[in-house]
Image (cartoon, rainbow, N blue to C red; front, side, top):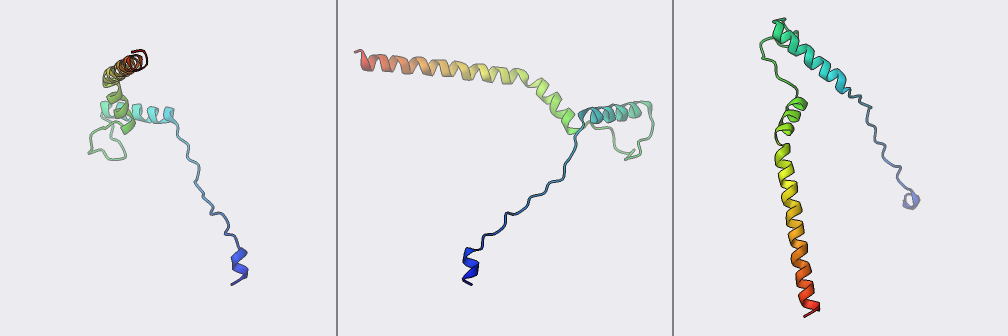
Length: 98
């Protein structure tokens, strides 16, 4: 029991296998599935389901539509910051120089 007092635990090992992501291959497969769907070639995976783009493609389309709203929110945020700085500078001016 006394010997365990000085015993330090070994660090736990964390092993994550490497994963390789190739966006070009995903786009190529996506185009190939679209072409097969348009030509009427049966897809081996599940021919009963209609073609659905990958989640990544859906996210890109959604971000393309909402880019104006992101610009507007950034502009509004900057405007609020400028107004806040002006108000604080007037308060400091009246506090010290009045």
